[in-house]
Image (cartoon, each protein chain N blue to C red):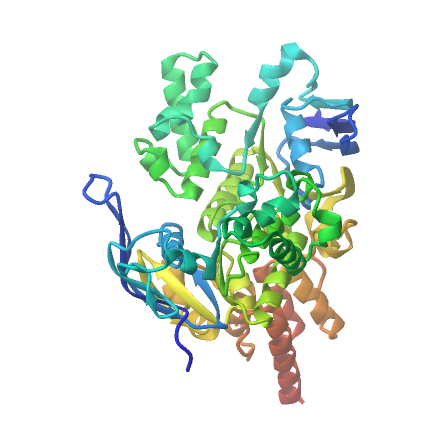
Amino acid sequence: MSDPLIACRGLCHTYLRGTPMEAMALDGVTLEIRPGEVVAIIGPTGSGKSTLIQHFNGLLRPTAGEVRIAGEDLWAPRADRRRARQQIGLVFQFPEYQLFEETVRKDVAFGPKNLGLPAETIAARVDEALRQVGLDPGRFGDRSPFTLSGGEMRRVALAGVLAMRPSCLVLDEPTAGLDPRGKEELLERIAALHRKGMTLVLVTHSMDEAALLAGRIVVMQAGRVMLDGSPHEVFAREDDLRRIGLALPQAARLVRLLRGRGMPVGDALTIVEARQAILAAVRGMGRGAH
Amino acid sequence: MSEPLIEVTDLRYVYHSDTPQAVVALDGLSFSVEPGEYLGIVGGNGSGKSTLAKHLNALLLPASGTVRVGGLDTRDRAAIWEIRRRVGMIFQNPDNQLVATVVEEDVAFGPENLGLPPAMIRERVGEALAAVGMTEFRRRAPHLLSGGQKQRVAIAGILAMRPACLVLDEATTMLDPAGRAEVLETLAVLNRRDGVTIMLISHAMEDLADAGRIIAMDRGRIVLDGPAARVMARADEIPGGRLGAPQMAKLARWLREDGLRLPEGAHTVEALADAVAAAAGLGTQGDV
């Protein structure tokens, strides 16, 4: 079994410590992310999701506990946090608000340039990153990012992170505010990155997206890990999820309702699974009747 | 038939007109909204729906065509404040819409600007907070509320102006599922109980489950306008292809292709469960 790429142990984070506004955002989180995994982090607003992922590349310093990236303690005296930041690419919510350069190419080149890479290497990385997000460098490279559609701008921002060649992408609400087509395009690109070996951590409010993409789901509540397991394991705990204001994926809610009506439908988390489960149940009932 | 609340005729709008970057955002729209309607407006990014919203209370003025609110033309400068009072707008980010440090002061902000007497302001603030179910939070600081609660306070601030119509532009996009459900429930209640006209703009068909009618937009034009169930069933055919049917509508279509007899319009989880149970020869929950 491979070493964890990200490992948090007893991670605590308190904002504004020692002031009347003191707030504990993380309260002893222990969690490992292994290379090649797709992990969705879900939880209500204020449960600590965004604080947690900012610890994954050392943007925040733990109040207690530790974070290791590829085995190295991020906050050890001589730790190389720059390297960790390059390895774990963090894509914030609405990342297109951070675009600022005159052209798409320049914007994507910003990170690699700061690494001090030679010009040809930068150019090659920029083109590759743009292709990875499905934007043709010839068509989009010289355009102003501000003339692009919302979905295209977001993909440019993602390309800027990919140009750093991270081994793991951490995405905070990657599809928020995109229309269904923009969502689909972005999710396809993300899935393609995973097929090429990229480790993915996805913070999302959408149970449907978590069910569709993730191999594992971590549920955060009040700064702690409440549940951690496969989508089927996590979504089997409907009552626990409901208690903290989370719902099941739509397909799962549908099969539950059908079971309540007496239909022997198997489990389903996506509509593709629901289609099969419903058809199997209908056929089974038909045989029973004849 | 009553006079339409909003009447849009041949509306055209161009950004950066007379420059090489000119973009036609609205390309000849006509529709009207009756008092008490719950209208959904759906379209992809760049379809013109936000540009349309900004025309409804004269934040933008038509390049050609007209927009009338209760008979008042939005190009009539003398009518502009009355139009803005009648058509209240709620935007995507609740943090940008709250101005005061206490919830009830925030809700009072609009009526105060109308120059109403203090007793009347207090009455309206009380009513508006009750209408969105936020009375117990009236002395709280808005920035400590959840996203859904902030949006409800923003809605109360508009209601306190006694508008004829609420226009919500992607007002659920930044909320978590609980906050989104909370805001949608509030809108449904305001519409059914108080008769408030609602125009909910979204690119998520799933948000429009309570709408009676849906207008679908693409590239500045109306491409579908009809009863919600019919528009949802045809979502995949909407030109521009940026929308896609809600998940349950897609599943319903697949199951129909597989031979299940399902009626049109089963586009929510509950409705599809009823339809599938009926098709499988089971009763509804009440009959079991």
